[in-house]
Image (cartoon, rainbow, N blue to C red):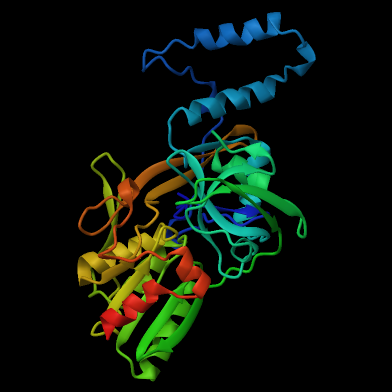
Length: 392
């Protein structure tokens, strides 16, 4: 099963926020015989109307040359999957399926902004640190209404990334609607190669701060090195900043939680909805368990960020400061289909140790602190200031 923790794609060429849990990588391939089975009988569904519609198009459509049977089949399947109503369950025809496989294998380029569906609207989850999107002023929570003049209404995440992607150095124009602003505005972003940052540390007023930007393959090791810096600093007060962190490897979230939680403490549950649930437990490194810790979160904190935040709050009473998290707590599996097509299908939801579903509403911070436009203009980070104040 391929575990896809992050929502998320980056517009461009093109980093997907879908990351793979190291111990849970398996792609399911259906045997071709399944495609030959009669379907619908068990559910009492008659597929006759499908074939009647098919034949009516063949018999009556004015321009027969425009009828591509294979494209019609792909379109019918896409419609069926879309009817499920889950933005993360998506059918990929062969060309898009190959592009998806290429993207998650490590092609980087684009604008560096993770996007997702929020309230049926294409929304920026977070711009990556130092990315073209961040430099252009795009913010977590911005709604994308158009991509280079094309409306995003009813557009899937994968369709959106296809519109956003393009050659390095080229421009994409986004029509943005921002919270608390009445009118949309246009932003032009120049595509570039994307370098994904992992960790940055600083010591401020006796408080050690780890800014964790991604739960990628290097993040567990980088976090470990950061903690060693913190120990050397003599501080036992720590801020873990996962704002605008879209997630990544499940195993990294478990590894980082293991520094703060006793061995075999529950980090998260994977609920399959049929009475079956898998548990993920702390390894109990116990190196900094006596430190005072708070976490910074916002609307760009998703997936593995939410798993870590939920675990530390439930099990260690770590306070969350900032704004409500994104609420991406579902797991996708990739199923290989005949002809090179594939299906990404949601198979489970993540639960915090207390049993809270991350998908339903995200995590509400213990201390809500919003960053205003005035704060941004003045270069003030009021959320970080509050975190330091609470630890001091």
